[in-house]
Image (cartoon, rainbow, N blue to C red; front, side, top):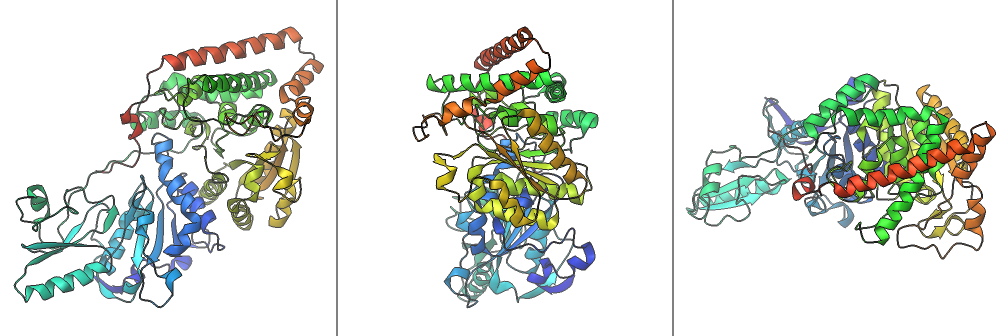
Amino acid sequence: MQRMRMNQAISAAGLLEQFGPERVRDTPISEMAFTGIAAGAAMHGLKPVIEIMFIEFLGVALDQLVTEAAKFRYLSRGHYEVPMVLRASVGSGTGFGCQHSQTLENWLIGTPGLVVASPSDAQTAYSLMRSAMDHPDPVVILEPRLLYGVRGEVDRELKLPLGQARVVRPGSQVTVVALGRMTRVAKAAADALAGEGIDAEVIDLLTVSPLDGAGGVWLAAGGPGSDHHPRRAGALRQGAGGPLRTRRGRCGSPHPRTNQHRRACQGVVGACRTHDWGTELMNQLLDRRAALANPLERYRRMLEIRHAEDEINKLFASGSIHGTTHLCQGQEALDVALGAALAPEDAVTATYRGHGVALGLGLPLESLFAEIMGKQDGCTDGVGGSMHLCAREIGLLPTFAIVGAGLPVAAGAAMAFQVNREQRVAVAVFGDGSANIGAFHETLNIASVWQLPVVFVLDHNVYGEYSRWNVTTPFEDLVRRADSYDMPGVQVDGMDVAATQAAIEQARARALAGDGPTLVEAKTYRFSGHSRSDTAPYRPEGELDAWRERDPIVVETARLLGEGIAQAELDRIEEEAAAAVAAAIAAAQAAPSATTAHMFGHVAARTA
């Protein structure tokens, strides 16, 4: 047993000297970026613990915690775990004023996939933090500020599982349920009541999301012995400090790596997925990626993407698919260049306009269409839909529906590769609209300071949603923003697959050599509107026609003809691509629809 203050039980004192600056990092004041970086690092083998200091500072980073980190397990069918911990102080009474005196657990407790706990003394602070660091899902520890000066005995061997409350004072007449600092207040009140002949039980919740599964904690009436709550009474009558019950489970997530990568992925499939992709389909994923070494296969993939997007638009228009979609006709060269330039073990974050990126990296057509149609054979069991595609086997993290959200997560993956000395890079693919968002600037700054092996690929398709670049940005060549972060900036014709592939390959080589990040601006054009209902009436007259003259498929057709490939051969490839898309649509339409079991299958880990 050791006597210590609550904050000493979990402070960073001495950690820098013990573990060094690579693992203990002093960050800029960039809560959004370092929260997302923690999520990306957690998905790739690290167990980050980040400190927000005051809970109010979390407001600028909520997207990265509740919309991204808490959803990655769900959107990857359990392939990605996010074992990160976020510490923040809460509560009033310290004289800091109203903007530094709130508790705000209600911001978090309704978030699926997130664990929220709050200690009540030095022992629970220590034990909850240990449990949080062992947990496979993101955990938020809310530390009451007024307890930082409280001292108490700490048993370093005592474990307090997350999701379990504890009885801190047994009683038979009335039950008081408390959290955090109020546990001490409630216990003192119960002791005072005892002098008046009232025997009060006090329960310390410890974890507010998920609540203890023993049942009835919030609905208790008449105390733990009440006939109205026999199940609860039995669960709680274990004496002071006795636990309530919880239930959870865990699946593993190996690191990918070439042939070894195939075997590892096959193991994960059996452990985590609702349905088994199987060895044949696993090989198809990687074979489709490897095929891009052949220029004719790159051409075929571009045609597959174009035909797929055209057909998806028709399916939505006919009412065959619900929701919305964001198409990428005109951007196929960049999509295929990414697959050709990167290795399957590299990590890629992309946006809601991600069909082309996913197909370029090797996702099978059948898996794409099944996902968009809400079928079980989709890449995320049909629960992600058009905006949320994922295939860990080829490096594709769950695609992001929030503008700019993938940038810090990619930087986090790169941090994990850096710390683990892995020859892998992370790539963030994002649009020109993202270059005006806070995540862009915070992430590029940290990536440069830490010299992370990450490539930022800016898909400048002229429009950020419905707004042309010139009404939202002071200059057109966004590559200039690389200068602000002391990193190389490369501008490339994004309608030319060969030029784009070369630029990404060079940036990747630079990252692998330890020379840090690169910003690659690919000049492309979005032939479609922002989403399925957008006819793009805001385009200047003649703009679309001018860009169609630089259609990436037209550009690549001319190149291949110039290299001696016969037109008949190219026509045959296009016919085969169109037929493959039609067959994939038919297969997806015949596949079984996702069920409620799929909907709730990977919300959180199941730990024993």
